[in-house]
Image (tube, rainbow, N blue to C red):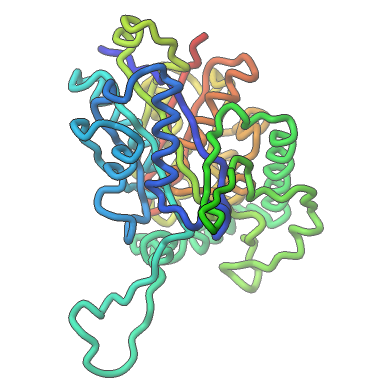
Length: 395
């Protein structure tokens, strides 16, 4: 069986909702990480034979965002591109599809990743296509309809996570404490320059034909305190609710990418891979309890890799909600000292279709920074899916 290596990994910084990247479409800043991923891999763009890229909120972006991103990023038009939409797991699933294509012998080199602009998700008049003969109509927020609300679970993601927190007796205090830790870890990582090597700067329009450089995380809150978090009201359940804006992930505009290649091909070309893909899993789970899906996906991926959770040096588990993370932590009996060591989506943002690729990039650089080898990246997915990818860093 062919082995799949990761030649490069790069991401943008996390742009806050209506922040620095709000005027750029997802394929525009996505193209920048594509160019940088190719450059860092030490290959020419025509080495890439296929692109698989995540894009969750596609309305208004244009047809096949993966294709737009790849071609804008300099990938030759002869290399096909496919967009993946499995919500929060899109870019990790893109990596899985890319790895499978290499293992099958269909291609030797695949560009994978994801790009998302939450700031540009449009509103829609769903009945206007056939005419509004009389009366009023409502404007539909596609961020809610195509993202936050789950028809299978019968409610908003936050509402279902509130129910999970109540079921597992996860308290508001526990959630706020975890959120605080996420912000503090990110603040420390930024001050220590831990993200410097993994982030590609983005030139963003600044008016009058000028641009400004965006390269710093703009979501985390320096100096966060428990008192400050405790003052925030519950969002999804007014009486007795535990989930707030402070202990949930932040909306985020960002992109991330990796270059995958057959290991023997990389060796023949004299390239130096960052890591090898040891295993992966994409699983189904009960929609109402979607937040626990990493507790199924991670063991499944580890089993395919022939490894145990205790073998993992570092873990990246997406922080959709503090309650969701804590549920997984309990179920898997995670050592928190190994998880999200530079903070997670609560502090760094959750760019949905780019999230998996983003946290995998951070995982790879954290393993290198700490001189460690094995890691797993995982995300829960609205609708009841879960995904995990196991990697081993190569010296």
